[in-house]
Image 1 (cartoon, rainbow, N blue to C red):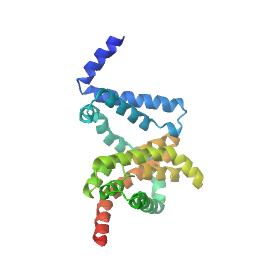
Image 2: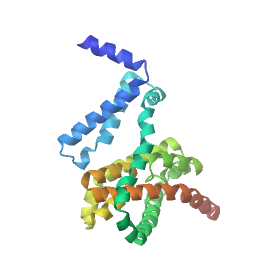
Image 3: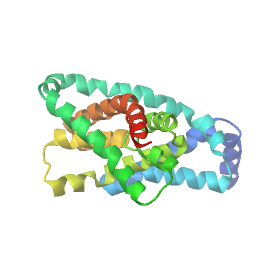
Image 4: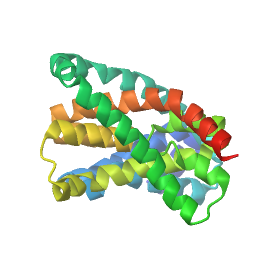
Length: 243
């Protein structure tokens, strides 16, 4: 049995299937732990899968570029997955139209708070300008956050780390924050989770309730679009005023 596993690993490690296989196995392990814990938010499968992937790459000394050559198919599927969020949104379109003003106001306030709160804390701690710029889009989905960070002088890789960490923290702690704040409406909880914790928070919202997931997906998409358009302009205006 050991020889068979060894030969399988030798075969996979020499083909692009290695990255894809490792990604799927890591997530399967994370999801199994998540299900065993009765879907407790602290056992979110994303950080577990990330830890498994990192441990495997470190143990085998596999470069990230080599891993991504095989895992990029999963990365490609992110696009169709995001587009698929429009299906539940279409079912709730009448309710969304009735709440157009509260949604727009929440989007503006939430986007500003998400960007400025972390930057203000980091600035007070004396972090570098590049790190500050990487923090600005932390609540936007990672691919968009990387593009924004590059435009405003940040580090795309660091921005991706901040975005993923923000999504995980939001998905894990969101329920407790909402309960402490007395937020009971599932639509409001979902919208806030999608805005603050992007795709990872949206996935968590769908696991809790369909309406929560629908509004989380709406916030997720609107925030990504608004941030891509407004954040570079806002940072440029701030630098012009400050300098």
